Length: 409
Image 1 (cartoon, rainbow, N blue to C red):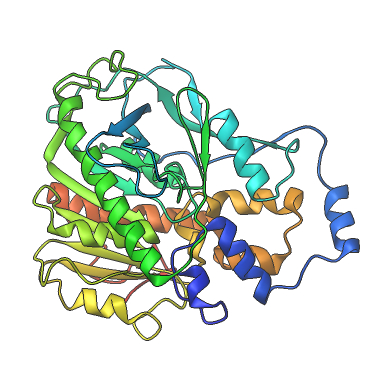
Image 2 (image 1 turned 60 degrees about the vertical axis):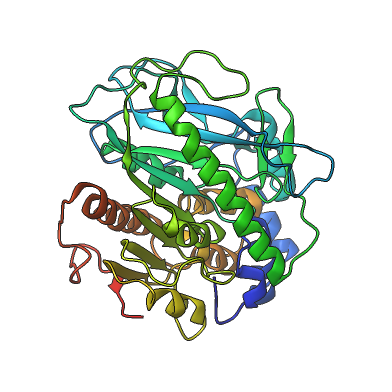
């Protein structure tokens, strides 16, 4: 992402942790007196961090899976002859309490997240999602359209849970993909955590990571056929949730992503299994893998992100010959397209963030309005492209969403 006051190289593919360093360049540090005042207002005991409720009528189920691609060595760690990563399958679930709701991050990954971002270890309780682990799949007249999500650099597959759960509650099946070593922290079933660990920060590194992410997403997509056939493709195996067999419509697949994940989604338009894509505030890295595409594509743009500051978006735009739309989210930040739009305001007190630092993360847009707007436009795009339902939201300005501006690149 580009930003008029923050070096482009820092925000091109980095998210939460690196954005913090970038925000420090434009926001004053919290002085000791302010820090003391903030600490004085922090209640004792862990503070529960809350995620907004999904807006649809379907409850949410979730299934984490540990995938191993034995056909390629891990390109980031010499000596590992295979690529291990985690995904989660989120799906409409049978009504009722069913299984327990899953945490936003597993325990060891949550502690790593707090330590990595210098957040108070004992003051924050991990957010609880609305997804129930292993719940029965809600029967439907037809299989569910599939959306695959790739997160931003330094973030995890759960970083857009506010968007993922909302899509599921409206009848989508969403697969979120972690990319170990450029993800913030990935916890595997045996409990070990792989934290972010890349030393380089060059344009060539951006291109290399997009290629790695594409391979992860395509491998995950290939294993969804196994899931649809009723077999568990994970390393650990085990039974699948009741009703998952045949629940995926693999003829209706979209790939979406935030930041570096958005670039990944753009490059994957050339795969015949992918019908549509969406880029949530990401630049495009590396030469295009296709000269033109008639597949639908959506750009979500943060404040200050346009073709003047990022000509790669214009280069991609002119290659798109199918339905295309761009939505600028006014007064937003790079993390406004993630769960941090909801979590940063809750973190601000315990973490000692100043208002300027909060704005560096998520802009000055009202958090509830931001979440509501991004959810609505993303669902409108997917309804149009995967379900052929057009609510008109992507064709003309809407008074219901004054923070969204349809733009022409």
